[in-house]
Length: 469
Image (cartoon, rainbow, N blue to C red):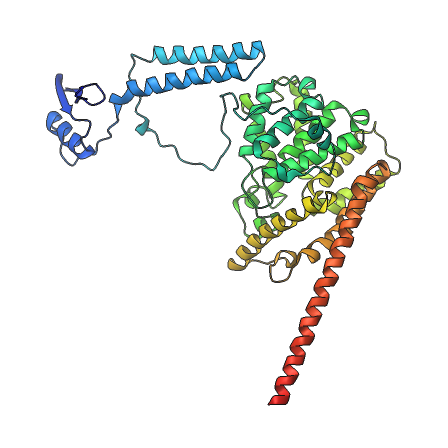
């Protein structure tokens, strides 16, 4: 109890003042003002001088803490069950870090308070540690369910969704095709997840929905027999990245509010251009580059193809892209690069807005999420004096009115066009859309009947009041 260990004993600092060594002793309980007073009196510095003081005497404790954390990291690497070559690589990295710490042990330590780390708005950060989300073994039931649009996306935590995405890349043969380091794939997926914001709709779960629907369409339409593995990799990667760092306010808002994104991209698909930029920021990190082992010329083509698909998700281009596909679909040629590019653009568009393909209990919560995000935007537009779209105005829109037109005039025509090329999607994708349209039309009839009833009751009450007067 009476121990005078280094943690509790007095601390000493030796100052070189005009060639003479001055010793300053102070208690660990001294306040910054007390320490400043001691330093000023020892070195003849004016009392009003500004001093930057570091807790340099804690360096030994900090080194111990870092060493312990390194040891824990080593243990975690062993428990991950990695391949021998990957374990050795991690061990070598750890050894280099230990050696570097040792070599700096006797050197002067830079004070962290010298540096000003300002938040420049970029969320993309390197991850050199081994990703620590749990490794799940997917059941055969889950593996089969993942291939179908009926998959219930609401029952999964982020870690589980990450594991499912990881499984898809392995199952489709993309890890082998692009010679991906499995640990790099894990780091990339984590970086992707961390760069989706917690918006009501445009969030990581939406990213997973779109990617899972793409995975389902690849299997349902037998795309692996018709497209190259590079095309499959482009489709999946574009789906995963298509809404990265979405701010929750659409392009119309960006342009009308003259936001930084709108100015940067000259009002041309500002959000989609931003999603692309963030995607390739992440891929530019060596520890997250799943295409690191791809030939530079091949990567250039992959990059351009992914950008093309993400830019195609701008709904302002919907009519243009669908019309182009309609002109090709009757004489579609899988050996024609232009035809295949157009198909991939339509496929990512289908997956991006495919919630109504899913069962009602899975699809309907997404409508609530989307309306919540719409209302956030329209409320902000009203407060800023900007134009408000009627379909986003909480005072004008209902769930049935929000969905009926979208399903009838956007979803069904697009999926029916794809059905010409892949008839097998009718039962599992197109028919659910027709059922969803009918469902919302019935709801609208009920809403209209209730509105009419209230209107009649109000008129009746008004007439009685006039008679009584």
